[in-house]
Length: 373
Image (spheres, rainbow, N blue to C red):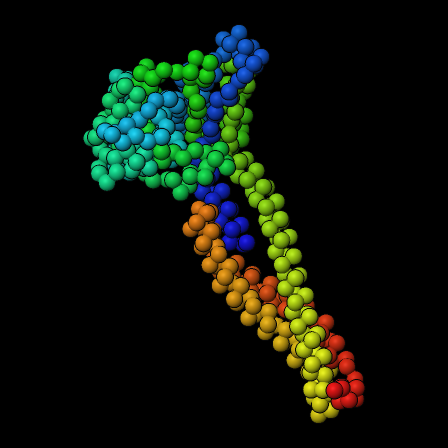
C-alpha cells in the first residue's frame, strides 16, 4: 500500500513537471446556452492569437505559445493514427520545456509562409512511421501533405496519465504552424479559435501574481466574460495531494483492519500455547526463572511469528506491487523506507498482541502450573 501511495505521489510530481512548474495554461471553456449567446453578443469568440500577443506584453511573462487544435485525420501511407493536430508557434518547446529529440521544431518563417511542415510527438512517430526515421517523410493531414521536420522527445511516462492534473498525452501530438492550421483546416464555428495558450513565467517571478494579472487582462479583453480558465500546476498538485491523502487514509484504514485481524490471530495462538505449556511454565519457575523470564520467552515467540510473517508479507507485497505496475499500468515504488516501515509494523503488531498472553503466562502460580495436566 505504501508502494502504491509513493507511486501516486511521484506520478503527480511527474505530471506537474510535464505541465511545467513555471508554466501557466490558459484553456478555453466551452460555453453553452445563454452564456454562449451573451459572449457572441459582446463580440467575444474565445481565446485568440491577439490574446496571446496581449499576454506576451505582460510583465513577468517570458514566453507564450498558442495552441490551436485542428480536427483532421492524419495518415502516413496506408497507416493512420488517432493523433491530435496542434497548431503552435516556434516558442512552444521553450515555453513548455519539451525539447526536440531529432530534427528541428517549427521556425518563425514556417509560420510566416504558412509552410506545410510538421513535427511529430514520439508516440505519433512510432504509430505513423514505425521502425523508420520519420525525418523527411511525408504525412497527410486532412487533404494536405506535410513534410516531417522533427520528432519530439518521448515524454509519455510523464503525461500519459496527465489528465489527473489537467495534462494531455503530448507524445501523440502532431505540431504544425499555427497560421497554416488556421488557414488550411476548418474551425468550429461556435468554438474558441485557440484551445489553449501556454505561458512561461520569468524565473523569480511569483507565478500566482502573474496568473492573477493574466486573468485580469483577459477578462478585460473579453468584456468580463470568463470563457477561459487559468491553470496553475502548483495548485493542481495541491489538489491532487489532497485527494491522495484521502486515498492514503482509506488505504491505511483497510491495512489497520488487516493488522488487527492478524494481531488477534497471533494473540489466540499464543494464548493456546500458554495453556498447552502450563506445566513447562511451572517447571521453569520452580527451577529459578522469574516472571520477567517467562514474559520475555512468550514475547519473543510472538515477535518471531510476527517477524517471519512480516518477511513473507514483504516479499508478497513487493511482488504484488510489481504485478500491479505490470498489468494495471500503475506506477509503484518499493523503497527501503516502505520495506522498513512494513517490517517495523509487523514487529510492533507481534509485540502489541503478544504482550497480553506473555504477561498472563508470567503471572501464573507455579504450584498450580505443576499440578496442571
